[in-house]
Length: 208
Image (cartoon, rainbow, N blue to C red):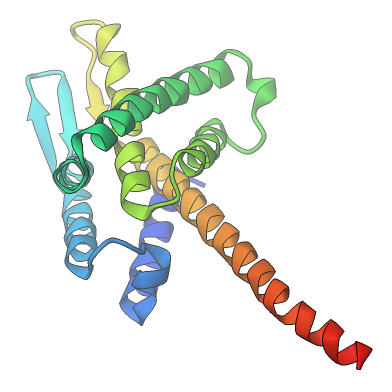
């Protein structure tokens, strides 16, 4: 599958789910306006690019990532923001080094190096927080960090594209992974609580 297809598929699936009334379950804590703004900016960003000098071009989806970070920073206390900034930077370094590790030793790849790295970061984001907006924010920062690190070592005449299809696939795979793990965990907890409430009544009825 070519780069970019995963992000298109997951973006369309997420759009359908959210428009069908699943917002409160899938991205609980994020308002409809925030979701609509993010998706609209992402769609527009797919077809626009911003040149930074003669050798760097930034895809418009970066604006969606930055808006997510800004919204999170405005919504949360400074201590929480600081924690997630540090976490996002660490996850960005992990994404970068995991992809470099796969490049140097391809035998470690299970599916594709980008998908493997995205799933690893999705699991880590889920371990960091179970909330939808903080997960989106920490992943946005992580992928921005991972994307700009090559700027430090690239030759001055080499063209570099930020926010390309690989990043788009990675962000969506990671976020969907984090949300699926979160919803699965919540479902398991709900079922255990349900059984805990009902089981004593059933046992009591059997004894009678």
